[in-house]
Length: 273
Ligand SMILES: [Fe+2]
Ligand SMILES: [Fe+2]
Image (tube, rainbow, N blue to C red):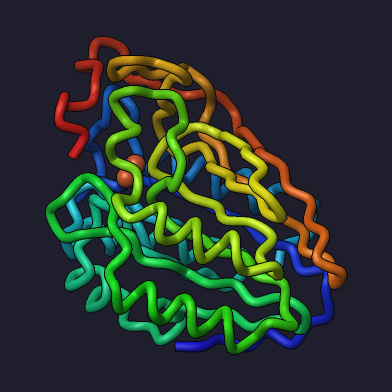
């Protein structure tokens, strides 16, 4: 589905990612209450005086991917001061995700602005940790980019295309990343691709576009770690300002402190599923 947003740029985006909201309100992830840490981030957004037009929630919305978890997630997302759109991550299940949020806006994959288009790419494979963009999804993406050569393009996706330097995470990147990178290298109007999944912020420049990733609203993964490791950085989110001429500004915003329940088991099961 297509969402048309007629405001003149600059347009202000918020990206929220990897909320991992559990299907029980009190359940913890490595000692962190993911529902509360998402609430902390949304409180931060609501208390921020910076402008916002819409929010994008880029996968691992919930941890278990069942209806109860999406209901709890929406309790928080519905507090956002702007319309929000989402895409799935490896923890999500599109059945419950779609039926719980019975709202047309949440099935949107393409957002058309005056001078930009934003594309929400699905890289999830049911019950798999690693990412893959299906051939039908790739065709849809290439067609959308071809249809609007005059608009600057931004792509949001859950899994990364490039390694981030964490040996345990890097095999989970999009399996057919080379196919996508070839498309992107040949799409001159592309300005950036931004992902979640890696629970850390990264920035890479490649030819005419940037590849970015964004911290989680709950636990953070330690940069450049060979094995699974967490950082104690606070929950965070990302802001973008899209300008009519194709320039964009972006920043990471951290909100408060990471709150861990004392004595709760640490670690994320070794399979990071
Ligand atoms: Fe995640
Ligand atoms: Fe993920």
